[in-house]
Image (cartoon, rainbow, N blue to C red; front, side):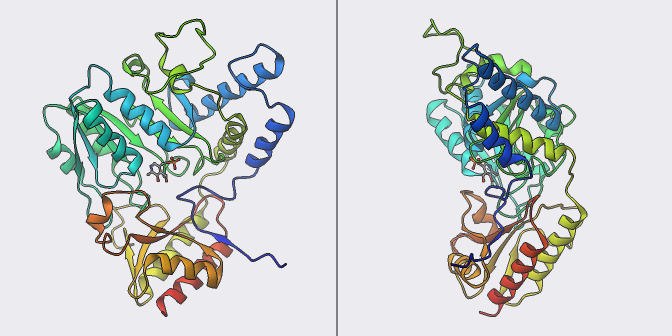
Amino acid sequence: MAVRPRFYLDHAATSWPKPPGSLTACIDYQTSNGAAAGRGVYQSAEAASELVRTTRQAIARLIGAPNAIDIALCCNGTQALNAGILGLLQSKNLRGCHVVTTATEHNSVLRPLQLATHSCGITWTAVPCDASGWVDPNQVRDTMTANTRLVVVNHVSNVTGAVQDIHAIADIARERDALLLVDAAQSLGYLPIDVVKDSIDMLAAPGHKGAGGMLGTGILYVRNDLQKQMESIWIGGTGTQSDSIDGPFDWLAAVESGNSNLPAIASLKAGLEWLRDHRPPDSMRIWSETILKAIQQTPNLKLIGPGNDDPARSRLPVFSLICEKLSCHEAAMLLDSACGVEARSGFHCAGLIHDYLGTKDRGGTLRLSLGHTSTLADVEAAVAGIEILGSM
Ligand SMILES: Cc1ncc(COP(=O)(O)O)c(C=O)c1O
């Protein structure tokens, strides 16, 4: 049977294909090593621990973290966000505080915050965004109260691609003595981030999107002097203090409880090495403009997100749209069946943003997203698919 061509435009969910070297590193690890890290003293177990150590170092370099041990390796972005948000809010210093977040957040921020209202007595407020998914930093300031101790911000909307002004938000958080947690799910590997220069206290992200690792990877950075106050939200085998069942356990060991996904971590390290030598090429910017223009110029389609009319508002190539005559699920099925274009439809796990984008009653949006390994053929297929959607 002939293989049907597929054009993957769902990099905002997870990148595919992975950068060169990432898959090979994953298979090589499992073929030639396969041991668990942080447990045994035999040579391959030591090599596994070394892999963890050097992967932490590569992440620390990418985000400007002062120490590799400020980085916890998690299994996805959701796990990293839960460990960061709930770990911090359960500490005695922050119980009962007020948290400011934004309407653009993913449910992996909103749901832990909602959980913390019951388990930690906190209150939280989501700052609205505009119709393109952009948050005004002044509204963050205006929403803060004397009891606000934490600000959680999604760096780049996974629905509209809008990039938030995290520098301005960091300044505001610092002015008011609040901590800043950045969800870098869509930006890690695509935008420069420096946790020290940008005054970011905590940063969480999947490792399987722009960082180029396999599914099953995530990272959490916590500023060194905050780690002591983080509570464990899960605990189990840590490979240390194994004769004690009540600790105290250090923050990193608790977050990384249980055996790590070493084959995926090997792929993440290879992805990060590839990234070090590859900044987003010019073609990415050109392709992004091509898709943007195609959506904007096609009748019956409406772009949901920043257009190219305001250069001050930057975006990444995550494009949401709605079709006048099709639901977003019908549009996604049509793209797939007519042109092999794989795009996501629905609310994209973002529980609040659709109230502000006007897309709630439409069942969300159709989303096309590019990544490091997108090709001209992907872009051409997307443009052809957009034309078909407009003709319906
Ligand atoms: C903005 C944002 N935050 C968090 C996540 C959660 O990451 P993961 O799917 O790795 O749990 C995603 C995933 O799409 C995301 O887009």
